[in-house]
Image 1: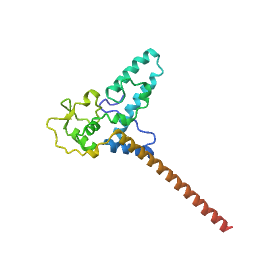
Image 2: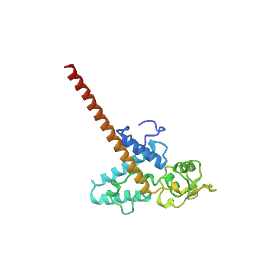
Image 3: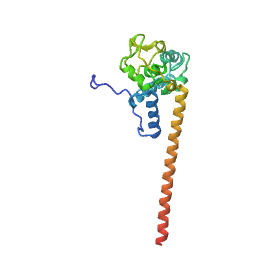
Amino acid sequence: MGDPKKKRKQYETPRKTWDRVLLEKERKLLETYGLKNKREVRRHETWLRNKRKLARDLLALPLDKRVQREKELVGGLAKIGIVKAGATIDDILRLKVEGLLERRLQTLVYRKGLANTVKQARQFITHGHIAINGRKAGSPNYLVPLSEAGSIGWFKAPLKVEIVQKHQRTERDIKKEFEEAMGKGEEEEARTAESTVSAEAAGAGEISAGTEKGS
């Protein structure tokens, strides 16, 4: 059973932790959303993976039970705004972690223009300057329901922050950044493979030349 005082691990570790493409993706997520470490990325990915697993399990249920549970699952996800109210199981299976990270309090504070950068947004939250419905919010990872998104603001006196519009990025910009990062990762892998083949070919040529010279 374990020690009840000890917190259980809330995320799953990837099988290939040193995979180049995975490392590049996680790096971009950390940079884009101002996450503290990779544990935060993996915690959200695990949460989303469990929701997708529930959606797949619903496909094996009888129709009468499936309809009710599907409605509950979609309703819970629609409440935080990562799917629409009329979404289906296929929509849930297509969910990406970026959609979930967009619903974090830290991201929404940045999107609303209360901070110049996502890292500054995290600082404002942890220092107690951000409130939801007038109540202080202290967790940057809080998934904000749609009903509370419009009530995000300053806690008590607002801070004087000069907003720089060039830092405002849309979901399209984020998608473009990820596509560029993934493309660079594939190019680096191709260059590495090409250089390895060239080195092996050169080594084989030297051995062949030495053999002919010796004979």
